[in-house]
Length: 200
Image (cartoon, rainbow, N blue to C red; front, side, top):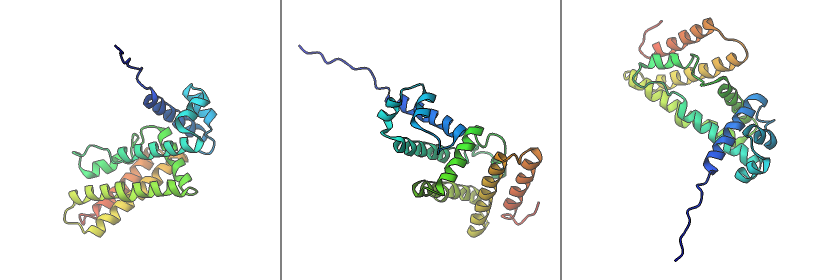
């Protein structure tokens, strides 16, 4: 009688996740353009050939990393507690912790810069904004301000996201501090206040 032996479980999923985390570290420290297979393999504590085995090429690794990074941002943005009032959730967009780490912010800025040169990345980020983040923010604002006009809701959501992007880009440039945080939060509240016809 032949007995089928159960093989060892594949470590592919764990190894791929580990390589992508290593890639994130390399991108945060050296930038997307300078992230090589050898650097990523070294950061992952693996042979370069193993990274090639899972991703096929540097382009394959880059595509997987962009997919992973964009997916992670898509899941995490506007993740603040849905039970909080929308003005509190908007405040949280400009507080430490809006990005889970400084490295995450650097990676996002790297992706934005890459989108200027790479049509595929540009389309992924465009879709993330126009199909997920902006509609979700509009939905939250409309729920909080049901009497507000849909065009006013859309304008407020867009203005808030422009503030968000600019604030954190300035943060990387050293234009930061508690006073800057208060200023941008006040500006955000002013935008939201227009939806109820009040002024701050």
